[in-house]
Image: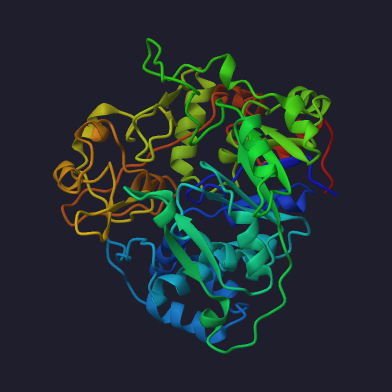
Length: 474
């Protein structure tokens, strides 16, 4: 049975294991975020692991000696002070320590979501964030993840990766390196046998792979991929939150500074349906009427993000959630599609709300710093080696590394900002706390449907019941 509703995989940590477990318990697909999961779990452990959840999950990790090492390195049994310990930023070749944390963290997030859920659990990754992908998928599969979802790029190699990890084969993944040609692309590698250090490897189920696409052209290309094709698709419209695909053709900006989407960006759903694989529609499909419309086009159902992002079970900092919902009730909620905010170069939806990076004074006051590094790009240096840079890092550093000076304007540190959005923001030695940044789909204002009759909050169950038009099984 395929789920009618997919709860969006919103990073960093907004799609928490608590949210995914609740949605799965109601018979739909609960999805955890796989973005920077190593950082979120390391910071929870540095906080003493409130509730003991990560430790509880790692008690079931199939390689106990590795789980013990992860806890020895990252679990703080005393007081950590104001600052979180730093972590090595992702590179193409991970250190042993990075690999162990990444596998264990993804295992823990999926394990906690599945524990007692009784329904399917998925994990969402960004193709743009390539360097942690292999150990992240392996960790999720060790925990029995049912679906792997990936967008923000062309995930052509992921079906083959999943097939290989399913039988504990060594796998590799080409990494985009600026300045490289197709013939000499760098690759990341992961060996399940080396990781296990001689321990018995458990049998793994193969999860379904859903590619998140924004065009019938991309879906068709992936479906015909000789290296393996997706098991289904999530077709995402430009009204969805987070990263959006850029408009096709020459970028045009409207009077508000937002990208203009036109007829070329409309998805041919007949072509998608003609591929003969299950698909779900996303981006503006948050009502029962829109669900029925999607199914009339041949879709199994819909993926919904924004409504779940602001429910009680999500990973959003409660104070920020309250702040935005107050704006929604007051009719003052506004989402801007910012073509400059993300270092990836993809348009990124930003909620305009006080005390966040969406306001100019907060953005200007934050010193540029890149110390989490998940959105860094690899580039080929003059000496032939590989370097790493981010358009949101200090301008002088970016230019010294050969980056385009015009590319830094308006770039925001999404890594640090999104960590702050879930209450895991860094406090700097200089005394300032990293400000948050918030994202949502264009239908943010429609959350009033969950806040009628003076309600100030709502739950994941409310979202599912509204979408299905019935009372969810209890």
